[in-house]
Every structure is written in C-alpha cells, then in structure tokens.
Amino acid sequence: MGAWDLLLVGLVILLGLCGVLLPGVPGSWLVWAGVLWWALKDPRPVAWWVLVGATVVLFLSQAVRWALPPRRLRAGGADGRLTAYAGCGSFLGFVLLPVLGAIPGFLAGIYLCERLRLGRRGEAVAALRTAMRSGGWSVLTELFTCQLITAAWLGTVLWG
Image 1 (cartoon, helix red, strand yellow):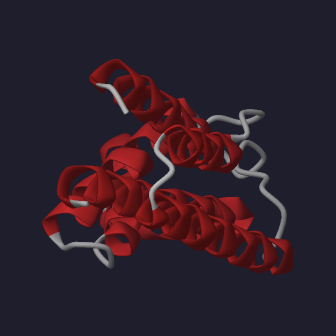
Image 2 (cartoon, rainbow, N blue to C red; image 1 turned 30 degrees about the horizontal axis):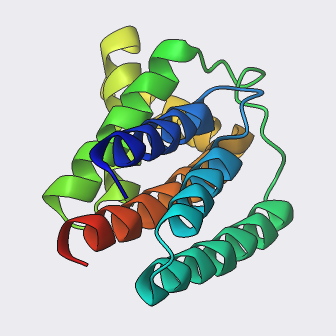
C-alpha cells in the first residue's frame, strides 16, 4: 500500500475520531471503514486480523453503549468546548499512560473545562457528574473503542 493510500486511510480514521465527539457524525463507523479500506488494499493476514479485532471490539462497544443511557450531552449543558476538552484529555491520557489513561484523561478534560468555566472545585465536580450522567459514559465508551482500533491500526502499519 502506498504512502498516499495510508495517508488517506489515516485521515478517514482521524475524521472518525473527531466524529465521535460531534453529534450526528458516525465516528466509530468511519474508523471501522478506514480499517476495512486498509485491509482490502493491503491483504496481509495481519491486516485481516486487525479488521476482525476492530469489528469485534466495535460490536462489544455498541452493546455496552446500548445498555448505557442515551447520549443527551446538549441537554446536560455540554457545549463544543467541553467535548473538545474531553477529547483532548482522552487523547493525552491515551498517549501518556498507554491505553488506560484515556479514561482519566477524558474525565480530567471535562473537569478542567468546568473548573475554568465555573471557578470552584465543588461546582466543577458536580458539573462533571452531570456531564457523565447525561451521556458522557456513552461518548467515552465510543471514543475509547475508536482509540483502541486506531492504536491497533497504527501499530500494525508502523511495526507490522
């Protein structure tokens, strides 16, 4: 697979990661479609195993999200700034503390945004709880799944 094809697949996956945080964009399906495209263009066994793993993880994520409350972040007072902070925190946590750091990073991003907005610790913690109850867990589940799939794809491209 050529460099341009890999770049385009990477852009589709990146769009999917950003799409998880945007309402109405099928982020996780874009990430999966990018991995599918890569596996079809680079038909090695490792590519197919990454695709199978991504499919299984994505279906498990959908089952978990189905059991969680529906996404109503806007109704809970979340805006674009909050989701941007949460997404950046999750990405930094995923990189700094590989894989498991995404969860505390997501929570820290929401807390930081609310602390800057409200100014007090107690109010920021209450706003964090409200955001997570109003659909934050669903967004975190989908974002974490997409980050796992992206890490598997990137690891396979770089070292596979």
